[in-house]
Image 1 (cartoon, rainbow, N blue to C red):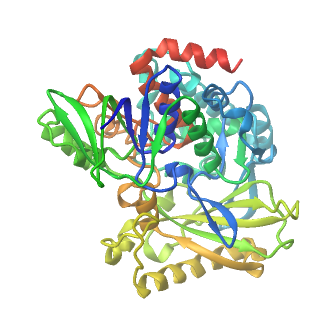
Image 2: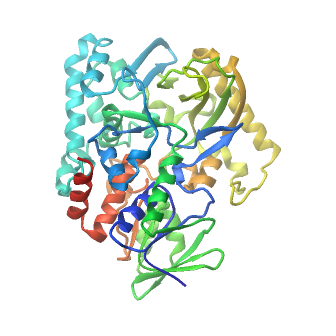
Image 3: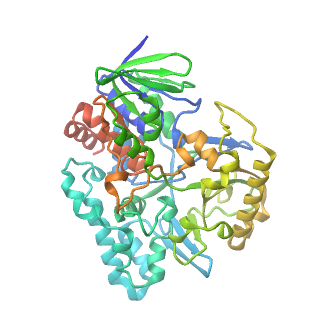
Length: 503
């Protein structure tokens, strides 16, 4: 019998960060992971001896004193992270199919404003107003600023939709440039709250960094910290059941029969998956149905390319291309309009500085296109070769995507050495998100009560952590982990320690 103070199911960022923060308080912590590689969305993989990120291609708010910097400093990993700042003059550059121009998004609020004002000289006041609403919105979320606060603080901004704010900007081009990298949060006119755009965008405006050598270094460093604090990670163990007795979860049962008992349990997995693990009258049907009925984000198709050495200049920035002049239209693409958008993420060749070694191309893809293969599984834990038709489908999509990319970036196609692809099924099998959703449950400004999933559950010693709770992304998940750990050790106490450590 394995007995712990805290048992955490899932080793994504939320699970690992929670484990480290609780282990720092002397708790005996175990993390149970179904795959061999830990990290969830932080996983990397090797293709042609080159490292690729699966999901996290860059991170925001990592300058000294900024929120992510403080959190990683407290977790003990900041000094060992190998980071490279993206271009200060444009960490992201926005492109449109019907416009030969390019629009850089600069780091730093004032630099960002000055840069865009040079393109939109008649919209300086509107840009000022937009940035003020963004900053006011971010300041209304206490944990985003590592302070305790009242839920009423964000009440005034939570009901604002993207359109409520963005339509105040009269220049349509400026409006769509500001929304140009909405692939970062799967933005939609009809549902996305403005705060999602604001919290995500502001973190990158503060500072934007790539993890040199891949984002998996974050999970590896957290694992190392956890081990030094007496915690343990069990890999290749899939949790099948969470056993409830007398109103509390008492143990987690793995597929191989191993059992883990604990006083507290944290599930770092999709809430719908958690519901499938629990047979308890404490989970009422209405709650189960709410969780299982929540709408997940769109999925994606990714093409990972190895380039011929010394041929493609490393741009030190990301690119976001939109087929439509409306940056949010892509999420509702029709099959004949695919690809409706794409993002380019380059990695520099350390043996040939100044040139790109690889590039990843990411674009939306509806999981419906996977219908004929949805009952197949293929992961490191459960390898299964899919049909030739599936491989043909991916290959056709890859060449179609590459053709569109080549219109703006011909050097990529001309110097392609080899490539590998990932479909919505890949994201589903490796990240554990239903439908291959890239951002989990989508916030809906019109139905906040249905789409805002609290970290507390109906069972008092079971909590949820991860991208489905609150805000997605590295910063969003980190903040959620603080909220969860604060429930066990005191939020004021934890925030004081985090803020003191990073001074």
